[in-house]
Length: 141
Image (cartoon, rainbow, N blue to C red):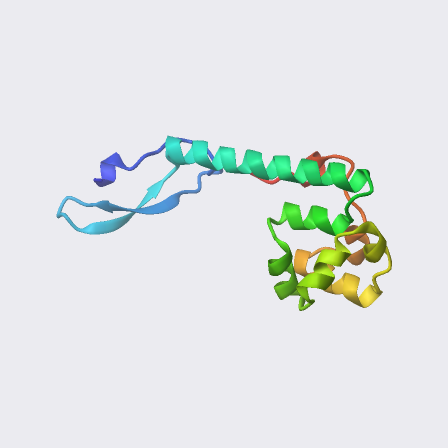
């Protein structure tokens, strides 16, 4: 596409920022061009974020029902699975899976809580709790 055809549909990108894409200039060369957004991409991103929000809400429901530990909330919020968290925290996958249960999570040592908290860039005390509603953690989208 030519530089003047680069989409400028407002959407996910805000505050005057631009996404970089390639376009063809007047001499037929590929150059970098800024785009405020593109409607099909905005729709796809909104659908993806809606799905993430649904997953986080369902995880909060499981935690409040006593079926999951707060660790599950921070995993969902950060779009992580057991394997990824295990790798980042340096803890075995089976142990991470067990720590997703309220009982084993409640018995974690301060050192292990800190390892998890460091992955999420939060305090250990914050890791042991979840917000009352999702609004406290909403991201700019």
